Length: 99
Image: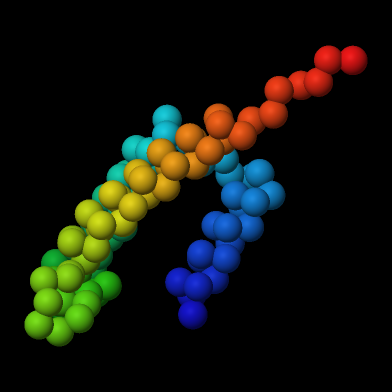
């Protein structure tokens, strides 16, 4: 449920113009995922939570899909989204009309 809420909030922020996706800011996603991963590793190593954020356990049983693989997939999809968004943003940008 909270993942759906996050997706809804991100879509609303992009549609309202509060957040403008930009290929120049792609590294923020990498930094955010790095902090998220470090927090999970802190929970596992220092506090002893063996199943914190399912970092080492497969998401689907009998598959190699763990958090690390999904992180790489998310980064690639995010990069593609930024490229497509910037392409369409520049392609369909209307020129100001002369009076």
